[in-house]
Image (cartoon, rainbow, N blue to C red; front, top):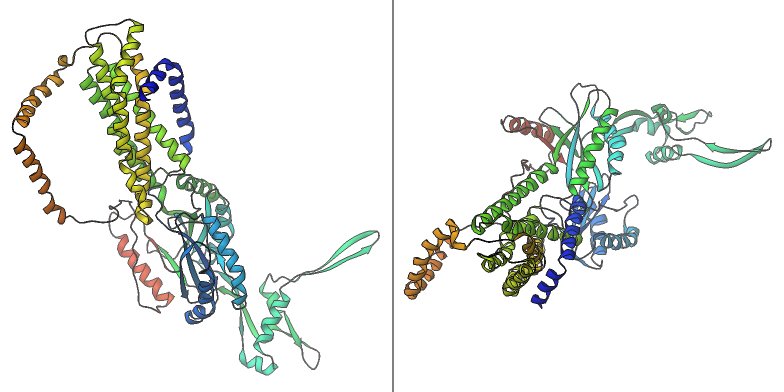
Length: 604
């Protein structure tokens, strides 16, 4: 069958060349949108459920929020692990699913269970799903700072929450823009217990009056002069004076009792559970851009940076947006290093082919078929939904050396047939067909054997499968493409490029030198086979001792250019003390000459 494929390819050589050109053009057009990231996503398929229960102790949150939710979510189809965490005023439940579970199907099933479990929760506690992201979705972090001191933390927080956040959340690939640091503005009502007692009012009466006064009421329409007018009672609180003038009732003399009679109203910051710091210079407001699962990290980050550059023009004077963390830097470096490695390998392969074949046009056959095989592997990789990262591109880098073997052997065999002769055109294609048919089947199946060598990697599961799976896929695709090209495109290219008189192999000085050195070694090995075999066994056994002392780790060190420093303090530390420790540590770290910037947060 392989010989028939070779004969068909040579007979329809125009169609084969056209198909190769179409694949090359398709690769140039399609691979521009290939998703790019630094490393494979090793995180589990998980859905996060967050429930706020303000002011409650962790024990109360555990009993009334976390426990009812975890027990209800354990019955979600496909769920493997349900973990619950209770904090002061917050509950987090993590639902982990099987590896093959679709994330959005999992989110829909969790949402169904939450709708049933909501009835068991206290009033005011509403569970919400976390962003549709993965554990590596944190791709960009920026900070709002004001070096002039014209704007306080509350104003910076307002800029982030009501301006930048909404602009960035609508970008393609962005799942969430989370805000950290700063102060949330509040209307604070400080009630005097003595005045409440004097007026005979309970505290609940104050709360009810404020809620009733902060609403708008529609009263249908009235008709006047052949026209309808909508009746609307405005009542939303907009100023401190609106709160102060809320009526609480009347006294015995009919005088209205207002909120300002029993309480003072002020504008202040809400209770904070987190602080952030920039370079030890003071607090700042940060924004964390979380990428949606399965999106192109490089394209998402580029869109965020472009939008931020445009939004900077609308910021108040003195306010700056500084980049704190940008994963695209790591992606660019990783992809650039691998791309340079692939180019270097292609150049080395071309030089080696030229040196040993001693014929420029013959080496072009191998050089042309190799990039085409890489393009085919990348096209299949994109169709499968794999990202271009250091593991997937590493699989191609591993396969490059073996991909070219079939073409070199086939060209060598053709050169043997063409040595010291220049056949006519018809005889030339017949010789090409004969030479390719002689070694084509053996080359095809030898490349297939290399292709299936990584099949056991596909059986790996969990994190190791997610890490090494892309490498195995791309290496397999590249070798399969090389095997197919060896019996289709390579014979056709040989017919077009390898023409005329070919010099004998002995005319190549490199081949003569290597043959002169190898022939005595081969004769000696064949003359004394037992010592050679014993030496091989001893050499193999000698690696057992150092092998036992070699360390192991799951992933090699990745020089990202960014360090994450996570100190731990004693439980119950105040927010003020946490801020002081954060700023002190940042000042010390900033003194290191290699450090460009330091940004950190304490709390949630």
